[in-house]
Amino acid sequence: MNILILQASPRANGNTAWMAEEYKNAAEAAGHKVTLVNVSRKHIAGCLACEYCHGKGNGACIQKDDMQELYPLMAEAEVLVLAAPIYYFTLCAQIQAPIQRMYCVNAPAKVKKMTLLCSSYSPNVYDGATAEFRDICNYWHAENTGVVTAKIDEQKTDATKQKIIDLVAKL
Image (cartoon, rainbow, N blue to C red; front, side):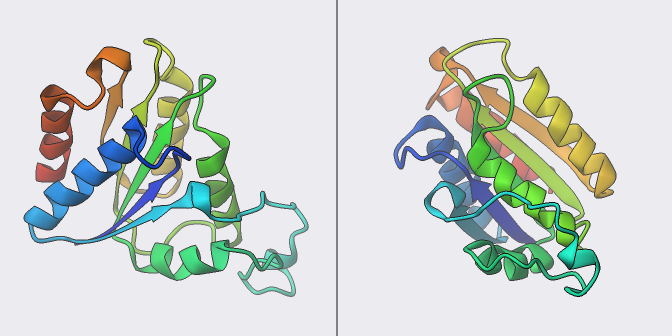
């Protein structure tokens, strides 16, 4: 399968980045094609709600920023993995911008499965992120293949790595 991982941690060697890399490694070992993009290093503005995309733009956003690199990747992805740190009870801003900018195409055409990977220093802060993720899966008619969360004592552990490997096995 063609897998796209959007990794949103600004910390190159952080916990979320580690989770995304572990998913990538497991998926590649299983024979999948994987593209991992660190969206926190991209310049992607939020949606302007200008409706250009649904009028004159014919599905294309008026903004010309690094999101232009993601649109073709999203169009070809069969599996979308969102990897995001949780700073304050929901998906971080770095992952929100690409999600919101998909408004112009409504839903990625080929995405049939989605996974969420989240890390935080605190326990019990994942409800907002998982609810949003579940809603996106439902709206895009994509199968929710699962969520792996890792609080401070679960980060970069063999147990968390195994949970990630188990999600890849569901593909």
